[in-house]
Length: 234
Image 1 (tube, rainbow, N blue to C red):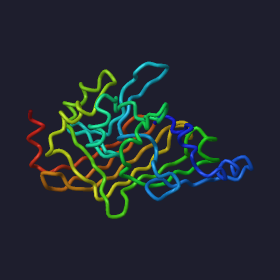
Image 2 (cartoon, rainbow, N blue to C red; image 1 turned 120 degrees about the vertical axis):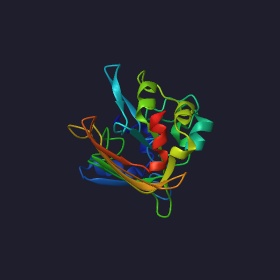
Image 3 (cartoon, rainbow, N blue to C red; image 1 turned 90 degrees about the vertical axis):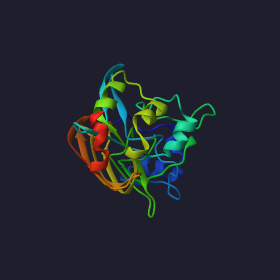
């Protein structure tokens, strides 16, 4: 996971910085509408490229042999409309020079981050928890991995390209979404776990459980209705 601090993330009460400078740890910052940081981190979806010393080393997408699961932090329709040329694999899109970055689209998740000192002082939180807002859902798209893998081999994936790979039948809403993230800047190895339960547009339940450590998937279980397995045969 790329670093999540920048000037945009320091628009929190100055008291957090004061506490950090006084050596008073640990700081918990909530994000989502009505929280400490309403806009959350400037990302569109849980999908990213892995770059080392300027070289593409791969991608981090939660998938098994059949399916890839892509949870969205922001409204997919808005991303398609407002950011059609944006590379989704560049997971963070900071605002600047009058451009709102990822904040152009509404945030659909909420949660909290634990910082050793404070945003703007630490390069990343020690831990971040993300979940669906009460009474709301989180969009999750599913794409056959054999379709998506060659598309992202060059480290580039735009929203129109993703939409073309994901028919409406394979799009759904998670009524339960839980993501735990330990970014690489704050721990020795990254660690992410995702659990999602919801329904597809076509009907039927989906279940996702996935995890990674050190940017390597450790397990991914994706259960989709039999009605969509026909897409695997194409």
